[in-house]
Image (cartoon, rainbow, N blue to C red; front, side, top):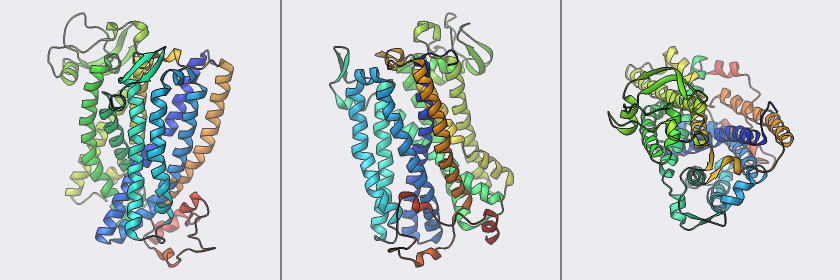
Length: 478
């Protein structure tokens, strides 16, 4: 298929499925915490706007959660189907970590999810809030275990190699490996920021269409507070993560920076833009700032960072991809900080909800957090190559013995099924977003019971409310 080998197709297939999957957990993590905050504020203040927003975003959370679970199961199966050699080599570490994720996070989420989605009139407010908090905690616990497993693959420790197989000897060292704290914080904060811009874009869309009510304004206000406070924190965590990567995976940093040669002994410049050429072993058409690379990464005006030529060709990541994926992530991060600062200025001028230029920017920034997460994930995973377990097992040795025909067929099937199935799901979720929050609760006259609308027959029944109304009619009523 297009001259690709079975290994290339297996990598593309996993990259495709993980790219689809990572979007849903990111939104799930952020929305779960957002819902907990909304319900907590409603219990404290009794302001109806928080309850209205809770009911609105809980529907979107339900759809997103379901798609995340389904896409995650497919990824897990690929470890056995496409990467059986990796499972045989490192399964004694990754298997238990993923099992802990199911036993703690997934069971916790599943146990309280029903109460959260369907228990508003069936349990007391305190218990319902507790269920929402437990679901939010469950999403963070899931992040903990998934990142522990993946971080161990980046910076493995706490093991021995016996007869060509990894044997765990120190589980605390395995879990809390050198890159884990940085990657956990980076991913969790990225999920919060991505969700903030998703929520903010939804509010901006309604405001630009003339639908202005307290719920919409509260959505935008809370989202912009999150952007203002958390986006700069993410930049600082990212800097610390970069220093950790420089220490443990210097080849990845060299690829991210497109830096090839230290023969001159001069401090490393920061290359803003360019085209790393793996064949010519140079970054072409580069625009650079002298010394700044050394200052940022080594906190030194004289010490150069590692260069790609310091490593054998077989051990170099693909700098062409990693260089640009990193810049997409970092560039979007800087733009998020700018949006947060602009929102603070507009808030001070009391024009946060009236500036159409700002609202258009927030609308276009809606997917920016998710794009940044994908770009960061590509940087992390492609930058680890050619290793699947860094320094222990090469990716070429981890793949199952499948033919090009088999891998081509399954890849095409994945693409067709994913775009069909998840395309419908994402479209349905966007349709819910377009409806906007309902600022009245007349539906609460029904207290459920047999045959009533509030009786949950299936999970997605949590989202079935008023989807047949025309958007413009809803906007006109506002």
